Length: 239
Image (cartoon, rainbow, N blue to C red):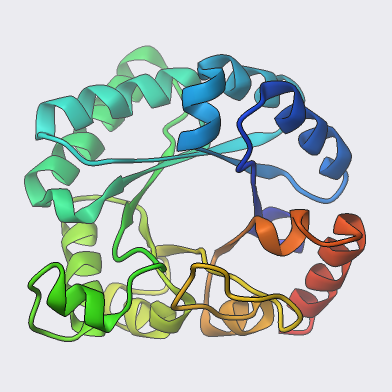
């Protein structure tokens, strides 16, 4: 994949018009834009449609986590919306992931729709080993937990996972090179980690085997966002 195909720019804003301004501003350098909870709740499905009308692809980052039937119906709605990719929480369990994958595939075949890629969220990059143990009561290591959830997602028929760059090599080794990984928590060396605890530079993430890297504040909060994205793209090209 080209650099342009591997960068996902997060539209972590709450105004539709502002989000579309960002899409237009970065359209020459980015093909995939992430619509998350804040923007989707504020603007609704229409913002996804407007982005797609501009010839861009949408990663719908709503992290579905519910009972299997509800997750399946939400996944089918995402497919009908035409998104390129969406995600679910792997911690919702095998049956929920299996239902989403199977039912979305059946729907797309029946209605002749392009099937979106479905990723399972492993452990959020804002969570570290101590939180996993003390707040969630999970006694084995964070990497062991990510490995387990990734294997469960693969078994359930998902296309890949969302995981920290620090776990990429392990996941690829466990699930295979064709198992997709989108890495959030990406921070160039010149930016602070913010609320992310498991971070990695763009170059490191690609070198480890990330298929996609998710960028938001690391670009949009820079004094010159276009220049920041250019530097990141050059960094990736040398990975």
